[in-house]
Amino acid sequence: MLYLEKKYQKYLGFNDYWFLLIGIPVVSLVIPFLFFDEFTDPTFVDLSFRKLARSGIYTTLYWFIVRSICIHLRIKYPSEEDIHKRLSLSLLSTVVVVSFLCPCIEAAECYSHIHGWDSWLLATIRSMLISFILISVCMGIYESIYYLTLWKKSKLETEQLKKNQLASQLQTLRNQVNPHFLFNSLNTLSAVIPDDPDLAVDFVENLSRVYRYILEVKDNDLIPLRDELVCIDSYLFLLHTRFGKKFITEVDLEGLSDNLMILPMSLQLLIENALKHNVVSKAKPLTISVTAAGDSSLLIENNFQPKLETAPSTNVGLENINSRLEILGLPPLEVSQTDSYFRVKLPLLKVQHHANIDH
Image (cartoon, rainbow, N blue to C red; front, top):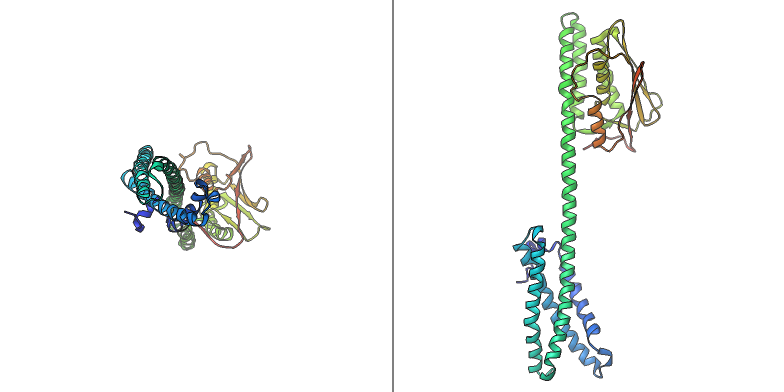
């Protein structure tokens, strides 16, 4: 069986149509000049044609035998753990085939008076040697290509698995943002409604814009900075409504280019982190500033006035952002702290075109 059907190509690791079409004639031409004394033969033209024809028949026969053995053994022993078994059986099959065919072919040539019976043994030994070399080269090529294909496939599967794991981690981190934000916003809204219904309406409108934005960017790894800043305006309105004069913000991003990308909701998380860990009161208002730090990062700074008792971490602050930055291959946050301030430097990414970068 020649196993020419496409369903057997996977056992070879590649489609060997051109390999057969080119390899067999080339090897058939090379063998006579390597193993026969063509240039010293007085009947060079006649013997060359005969030996080339003989070489072509031998090469084609052995090539397809080797090909069939490779396919058969890979079907029967597909596991990588069976590699030694496959190689051993391949060697044994080669010995059996050569030991049977070469004596028979040389005997047929003696019977046809191509050469005498007195040279049968020597011709058989030489034929077996040439056959072993031919089969070994052919089998070596097939095995090399097969295992190169397996290696590439394994590498691609490993990379895909890694990407899937990173995507899963990233989605988990994203999912942590929404419940935390919604919980705080609903608490604020419940406090505003009884005191100022008109302000509550404005609060709901801004909350709607912020939450719509979260839903729009939840599947994005990075977004344009200008889009994040539009969301932050609405988000800061919610916070000013909640804290009043106890909360002061300063945003100055003049000079930054328009082609900068940022982690979605990262500014919100940093502001939320500052609110979570610092005192916010009339006596000690919390001031948060957002400024440009060079042309590829933002500096978020707040006056440092830590709470005596802090709520348990919900993993949606600095750890969340750093994890997302690491997954995307971006540098981590640069955090610095003194007795008077807490600073976080958030990296941005420059792009050539203004477009969302999807995972």
